[in-house]
Image 1 (cartoon, helix red, strand yellow):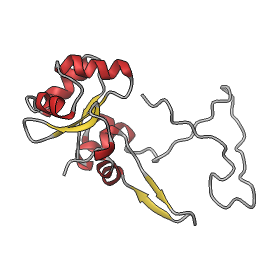
Image 2: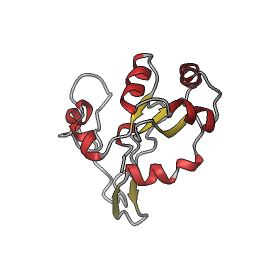
Image 3: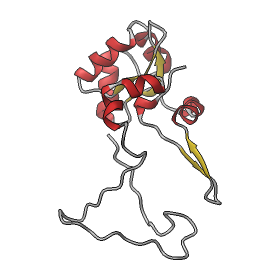
Image 4: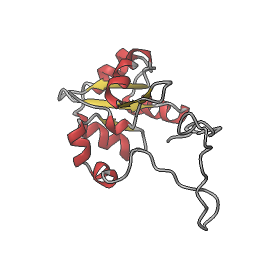
Length: 160
């Protein structure tokens, strides 16, 4: 089946004990599918493939409805998307600066230019933002119950 790897939704499952349960983008995204808004949803295209549309910001939402020439309802958007092949719609929307991506299987994602670019990177990369010089690594407290237990804020509020 199609995965939502290109939408970059990664759900890291850990237990309160710290036990690692894995990273599941597809399962958790599909489980949340019924809770999302029409402008932030996966739709089936004419070729049977799926595309994820993200209109989470007002400008992007307006861009999607203007492009599709429809109201922001699941039925209206679905009817318009169903007229396109996934590759063609992705390309046309991205050319207009909209946030749309064809859903790819993990194999397709790894073979894509973006997938190849990040293939050898770890799942999470930390970069220091404290100037251009090297910064000494911050040691975790000796009694840390979990790896990030002393981290106060991790901000993912602006991801686009």
